[in-house]
Length: 180
Image (cartoon, rainbow, N blue to C red; front, top):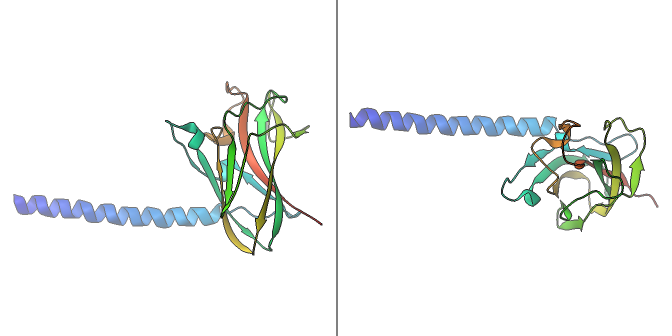
C-alpha cells in the first residue's frame, strides 16, 4: 500500500514538472508571436489587449501591463498614453500612472493633451484622448520590456464593452520618435 502511494505521488510530481515546463515553452512562444512591431513612421503602438497584464484585486493601483518590442536604432521617443473617455475635461485617474523602461521611470497623472476626433479605436459614448507622459531614451538597438502600472489596467483590457460604468479606460501607449 505504501509503495503504491509512493509511486502515485512520484508520478504526480513528475507530471506536474513536465506540465510546467511545457507551459513555460508555450508562453515563451506566444510572447514572441505577440511582439510589437514598429510602424512605418517609426512609432510603436503598444495596445493594452496585446500586453501581458497582471491584476491585483486587493490593490488595483498595482495592476501592470508589459510589452516586449525591438528597437532597431538607439534614440529618444515621446511617450503618449491613450485613453477612451466620456469626459474630455477630466480623465479621473485616481493615481499616477507609472511607466518603466530599464532604470528610467515616468510618473504622472494623465491629462487631456490631445483629443482625437473620428477615431475608429473607440465607439460612442467614448472619445480618444492622448496624454503626454514624457520621453524615454533607448541607448542601443535591441529587445526591450516596457511596463505600465495603473488602476485603469484590468483583465478585460480595452476590449470591455462601451456600456461599462467607468468613464475612462486605458487603451494603449504610443511611442513617437523624437526628431532634431
